[in-house]
Image (tube, rainbow, N blue to C red):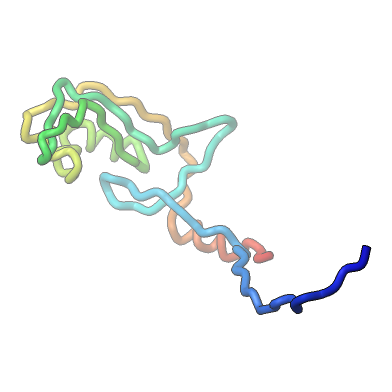
Length: 131
């Protein structure tokens, strides 16, 4: 069996973008606005996450039910306490619950004492090697 070339290959240049260093993300406290990252200890998960339950449900502008759940990111016990004792009413996404005169009746929180602030996070990221 013989083969005959009927057409030449078509060649072109191709540019490929390669990530040399992953993007840097951090948390923002929903109470004080602090940019931070909370370091895990052992097997910690869901750090800096305040979640809770309202005693009643609310309805959104579109008429759909919003349930009775609450969640926020916090950097400390102080901020968690501030949100739980009424500060949540200042959060835009929970205004419908405030309008319903709902109460935040239960919360759970898991935090560590190892909080890395924005400036230090950037310094650490800058020191990481690029591949």
